[in-house]
Length: 50
Image 1 (spheres, one colour):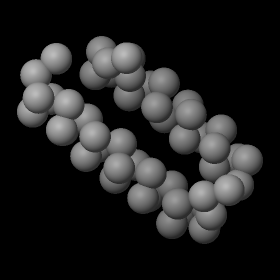
Image 2 (image 1 turned 135 degrees about the vertical axis):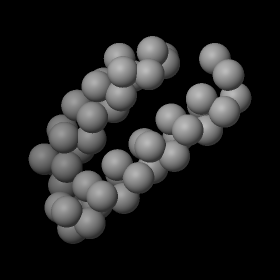
Image 3 (image 1 turned 90 degrees about the vertical axis):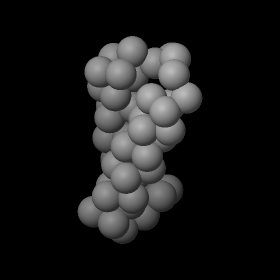
């Protein structure tokens, strides 16, 4: 995987995390974790990363 793709993916993930944290108002919430894990799975498939 190209370095710039990795950086882009990290940036996307960080933006998603920030959004979800604001949306759900917590990092410890079980629902937040569930949504975040689903997002990660989707992004891994979308960007072809492990």
